[in-house]
View 1 (tube, rainbow over the protein chains, first blue to last red):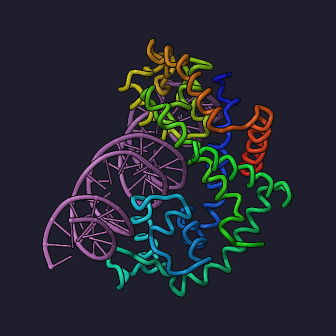
View 2 (cartoon, rainbow over the protein chains, first blue to last red):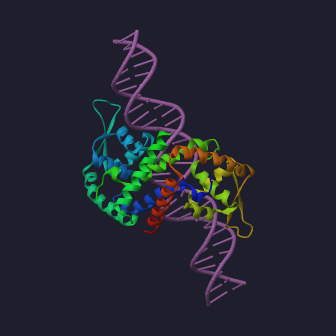
Length: 141
Length: 141
DNA sequence: CGCGATTGACTTGTGTGCGACTTAATCAGG
DNA sequence: CCTGATTAAGTCGCACACAAGTCAATCGCG
């Protein structure tokens, strides 16, 4: 097995991930969101009012990452964090009116990215599924 | 175009990249290297004594990232940084004896990862090439 | 030769990721 | 009911990434 840099799947993945973030960043800057913040918005646009741990499971992110990130999103005015009344340990995260409005503009970001990627929907879906399968195997191992 | 989280190639990529790093981290910990430090080692194992900017081009990393990273690697004893005598602006990075020795052990890390990935060489190469192609298109756009 | 432009590394500031730990609230067995 | 275990967030420390700016060395053109 070779140890060459260009042979490495890990390096290809690392590069592609950063290139993707770089492509998204200027588009998301117009929504005043960072890339991980955008991912949180995707989660909340699907189901509003989720607890921190649920968001963490969805994104595979720790509370150590999410707590400060969500606080910044709250300062920005995209979400509101509310301590649950039934269980005081739990913090639920809700979209603000502004946060809900952003969903429409996010669709444009999607379209922009799709141009940049320059691949067919079929290839894109296939690549996505390959990556998710790989992620599953890596997490299991 | 959908804005669902699971539809997103970007999210699949983000997850796969982090899962890959997580898989590598415990293996690299035995070499006392972080994942980005390991990438620098791959670059130097190919060609020793490269300048900071050359390493940066190879890994698509900025000197703002590399300078502190290389300093930590120097403290660890994997590399040595030397100011060029011909051009005092340039810093060249050399493997130490210890750094050279690590190359052999890195091969074991490769093997371990290959098990974790659980894919054929053919599929792995295909995925790698798809990712590199995507990276190229994203960087161009 | 002299000086403004460029270059290469470094520094600073902000935002993730994540391991390890803390704290407060809830749960569960006796 | 009480207390030890568990759980959910939060905190702390460290290591990337990367935009923006600094600084010294070198280059290039008049």
